[in-house]
Image (cartoon, rainbow, N blue to C red; front, side, top):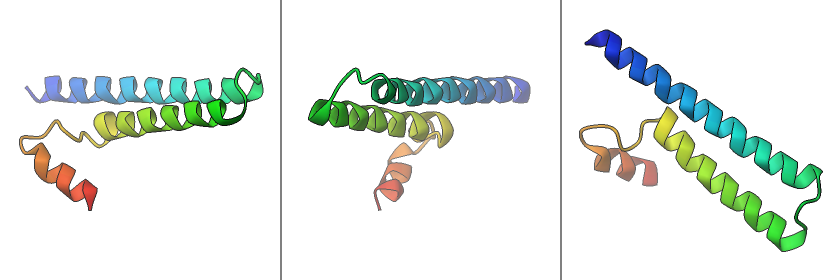
Length: 78
């Protein structure tokens, strides 16, 4: 039972890490290759940052996976 829990935790960390790297690399490519410009570039980067925030909260801080996720969300809000 404990081994299964550890394996699922490791898988969660690996998925979160890969998603974080992909999101960061996407933002980097957008800037370096001048794919977008001006306000649209900033809007896309902010959107990627917000997505990365939720990836970090879900995969690394496990917000929403506990038995009482509302308390953790309330504490995070403060």
